[in-house]
Length: 209
Image 1 (cartoon, rainbow, N blue to C red):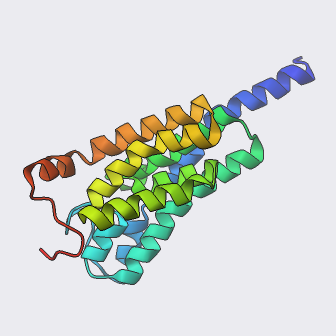
Image 2: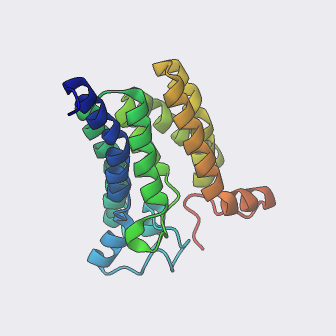
């Protein structure tokens, strides 16, 4: 028979597997697809920019839908991390849970692994880890977007800044590592945008097709 200490260790170890998987399943709920269906909009995976995210829902003609999508994508990043924090407030568990939710958004099991680019969900998971980072991320995005008028460039600059903010605010190597992984994944997902930015034909904010 295992001792009480061994049982507690086993239970804690299982959390490192179960919690990130649960976060992935929650992250796999695509706000853009569900809200588009609810509002009778085209499938954001096949219309507009073909990215199931808030910006594309706006492009498809629904401001309320875009707001709801943005809120949903942030919430599915925030909630799993807060739940993990309540269960066991340990940096590695929080980082794995955050990564699970983020990967769920990028590769949703419920929607043939066709997910979004992850900007809003990244904001959600990082804000749940340390709420103080949210104003810095939002401000960075807004400043870059206001100056250059490119949503994708604003997202890329903000992603690059996130690990720096995490180091400054938390000093936790695990969280800095998480920020780097999220940034790399965001850059990979924005590969087409990066090519268009380099060519000079990326669509600016507010510009119609």
